[in-house]
Every structure is written in structure tokens, then in C-alpha cells.
Length: 164
Image (cartoon, rainbow, N blue to C red; front, side, top):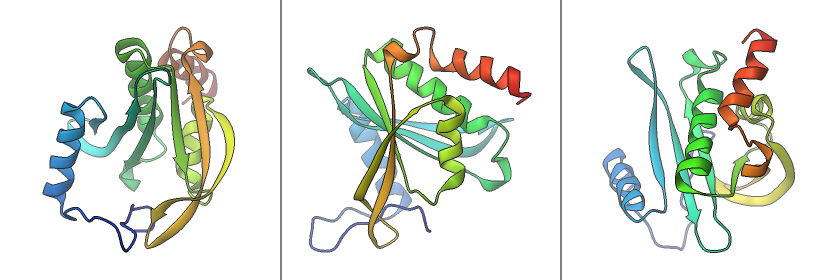
């Protein structure tokens, strides 16, 4: 798939199946370094969101990645899920900053963070190994000070005005 992470040659390998991925996500969650979420709509799994690379100490930040079934895109489901996850990171976990890295050509994913008002930080050249090669990504970020009432509140206010 064009957006799927791949393992670059020459390094350690992990299992590539679904079961291996689930076990790894559970391991990271137990260690406090990641949070895997399933995104549902009307009782159906329609996507997935992961808070990863949680860093504690003086940094207190993490990254968020997500995907949604194309049939459910454009309904405000993923911006809501991302807002909920980031609010959890800020107000439950006590993180200070959350980043999202997106390939520049992934217009739909960029639209999610734009709807939420995340700040564009810049381009990270050859940032992640995706679909068999090192790919550039656009970085977006938000800090807890930018959303004192929560990102979900800001998203709801914006969506109400936009008719979303």
C-alpha cells in the first residue's frame, strides 16, 4: 500500500503479519511508549490511530499516526478521533506536545490536521521508510498551551461553523 510503513533493508526485522503488529502495539502500550486505538463508527471498525514514540522526561511529547477506510473518509470521524487522542495525551497523560508526520502527497491526511488547526512545522526529508523507500514528510504539531480547552472543543467549534 502506498502509505504503509516498510522496513528498510539491512536492519533488524519484525514479523510482518497482523498478529505481530498487534503484539508489538500491546508491548509498547504496556511500556507506556505507545497507545493503539481502534476507530469505530456505528459499531464498525473503520480505522486505526496510534500514539507512538511517547517520550517522557523534559520532552513529554509523542507522535500520532492514523488511517481510515475510504468509505468513511470526509465525515469528520478521523479529525474527531485525532482530537480525542491528543486531548487524552495532554489532559490524562500529561504530555506537552504532539506531532503528526504526513507524506506531502497524502492530501486527505493533511486535511485532517488542517481541520484541527495543527501548526505546520516544515518538511522532514527522507523521514520514514514508506512503501519501499525513504519518503519526505510534512510535520505538524500542537502543544497543550495552544488548546487550553482541548483540541476536541476547538474542533467542535470549527466544525459547527463549517457545517461539518
